[in-house]
Every structure is written in C-alpha cells, then in structure tokens.
Image (cartoon, rainbow, N blue to C red):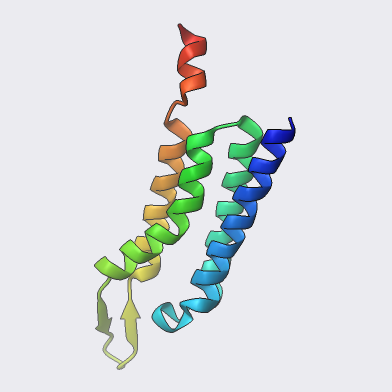
Length: 119
C-alpha cells in the first residue's frame, strides 16, 4: 500500500509539472488559456482512474501523453485565415484527439499482472 501511494503521488506531481510546463511555459506556442486547463482536468481524472484501478500502463500514458500529444499537435497543426482575417489553428483539435487516444490506449492495454491472473 505504501508503494502504491508514493507512486501515485509521483505520477500526480509529474502530471502537474507537465501541465504547468505546457500551460504557462509554452504559452507562446499555443496561446490558449482555457483548453489546457480542460484537457488537464480530463487527464487528472484519467490518472485518478488509473491509480484507483492500478493500471500502470494507463498511468504512464496519461502522464506522458499530455505533453507528447501537445508536441505532436504542434508538429502536425496548420494555421489558416478566415474570410474576416482572423487566424484559425487546429492545434487544439489534434491535441485533444491524440490525448484521448493515449488515455484509451492505456486503459485497454493489459498489464503483466492482469495477464498472469487470466492464465
């Protein structure tokens, strides 16, 4: 129990640092104020679910997926302009879809403990 608690605090702390890095440290890249918070809250809930169900792969993918999906979104995003001259950017869409995929992939991946129990 003690080991799970320390691991859980580590993952929550690392996720919080990842959120702070993307939200405030890389603000000049995305310019979004609300969406990193919404996506961070979703990631926090997924991480709590992973800690509760003791899914180690989901914990890791929720943690790494937040920052990695942001960087992949910036890599594959495109910027265009609407007819009124406003700037359109699809970074938030790519970021959201990739992060949902990371979280779902972590949820459906089986840990070694689960495969041992099934045999």
